[in-house]
Length: 144
Image 1 (cartoon, rainbow, N blue to C red):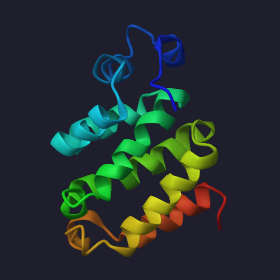
Image 2 (image 1 turned 135 degrees about the vertical axis):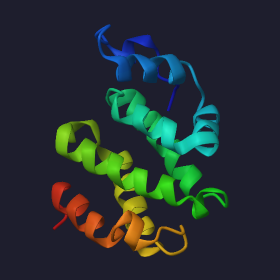
Image 3 (image 1 turned 60 degrees about the vertical axis):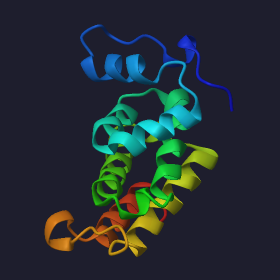
Image 4 (image 1 turned 180 degrees about the vertical axis):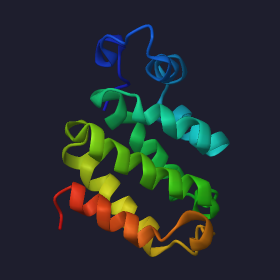
């Protein structure tokens, strides 16, 4: 897949601070650069995914997945929790943004995170039960 160009981002209202931030940070960035953003500060950059239109989202969301499955990401409890929250929000607010291979990848990653909550160091008393979040994700995605 090619790096999203300006037309892929569409019109972003000047008052949409989140959308403009996502454009400013991710525009013309490679997959590897995006992965590096998540590695540096997943808490900051996951919110940008929520504000992206479909084409950039489908290009950059897999970079988040790749980070989560890396050796650094597999102990990042915040990144794991934020991924589930991001996916829940996108499914609730803009379900059409996720399709095809990207949908399959994100749903498989959500299941992986839920199965490996302890590996991510995500204590249930802090983050809640990831399997409950997965159930809601699967319900919203029409899998159950």
